[in-house]
Length: 197
Length: 101
Picture 1 (cartoon, one colour):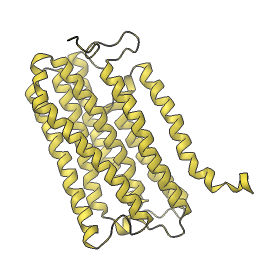
Picture 2 (tube, rainbow over the protein chains, first blue to last red):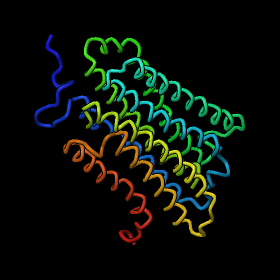
Picture 3 (cartoon, rainbow over the protein chains, first blue to last red):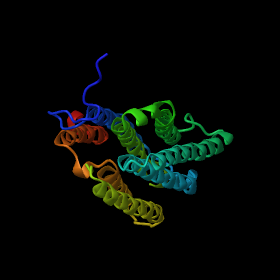
C-alpha cells in the first residue's frame, strides 16, 4: 500500500506537511462553532433586562484554578514537542503524560463545579444564563475529553511510531498540540465572559 | 518554525516566559473584575482586552503563529472575516429597526 504523502516533508505548494494544514482548517471550523455560541451569548445578554453577574453566582476561585491548569497543560505540550525535536523521548513522554494529568484535573474541578450546581437543582433549564453557561462550558469540556483521548492514544498504542518514524510522531504531537492550545484559547475567553463580566 | 537544536532550546526559554506572563495576566483579569469602572462598556472592554492579549500570546508562541507559512495566515484571515460577521449579527438584530422601521 502506498504511504500517505507529505506527513513529514512539507508539500511543495503549501510549504506545510499535510497534517498541519488539515488541523488548521479544522480549527477554522472550530472558531466558527464557538463563534456561533459566543454570538448567541451576546444576543441573549444584550437582549436581557436582568442578566446575572457571573462572579456572584459562579465559583470564580475554582474557575481560576482551572485557567491555571489549562495554561500549564499548554506549556507541557510545547515542552513535550520541543523535547521530541531534541531527541529527548523520555522527557517528552513525561511532559505529555503530565498534560493528560492536568487535563483530567481540569475535568475533576469542572465536575465539582457542575455537582455544586446540580445539588442546588440548578441546570441548563434554570434560565438563559445557565443555559449559556452549561452549553459553552459543556462543549468546551467535551473538547478537553477529546484531547485527552488523542494524547492517551499517542502515548500508548500510537507511540510505536516514535520508534519507526520519530519526525512523523513529533508532527502528530504538534498537530494535537495545536488543537490543545485552541482549547486553552477558548477557555481564556470563556472565563471572563461567563465568570467575571 | 524552529528546527535547529539551538533554536528549539531558545524557544523553550520563551515558552517559560509566556507561561509566567499568562499566569500573571490571569490574576490581573480576576483583580480587574473587582474594580468598579462605573461603566459596563469599560468593564467589558478591559476584560476582553486582557483576554485578547492572553489569547494572542498563546496563538503567537505556543501555536507558533509568529513564524508560520503564508497559507495558514490566509486560512486564518478568512476565518477572522467570517467570525467578525458572526459577532456583528447580534448588533444587527439590536438595530433592526433601521431596516424595518
